[in-house]
Image (tube, rainbow, N blue to C red; front, side):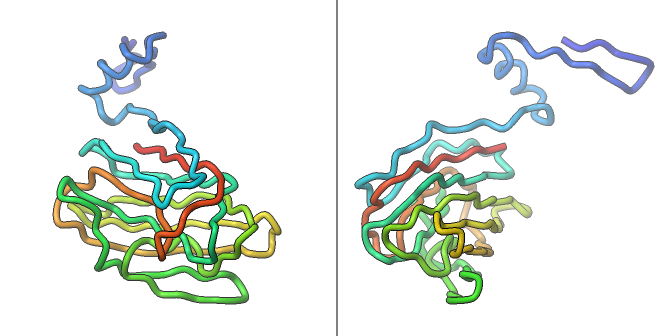
Length: 184
């Protein structure tokens, strides 16, 4: 429901039921709040997939909380369409401040260098520039506080983004942590 004040201002009331709000918001996309997926525990997985991303999405935040790996291979994010994950064509890389700088073409590189036994936390934001062209950037920090990783990348997908997957450069397994996405 909305109350018009004067000719151009509105005060909106959100229905108490999330289902009702979502139903109303389908017709008014500009007022839709971010939606979080169900967080995935990464322990023992080679990849953490998120599917069913709606076509109206313009920004995705990938959130890492205490993520660790079983072998020292960097974490990557691969974007996908209804035809599958895109595993080539990324332009960019990541830098561990004061250490390694790496280029990546197989995904959005989350870490510039990674060590086993450390817990990585932070966010990578993936934004739709226009059409099917996406950019990603963010900062991930290790539990020691000494391993800050800065990431930046871009990719042009063949069609609309509908999924993404978080994995490692070698498809080794995650030792622990939680990964989630929020999209808007």
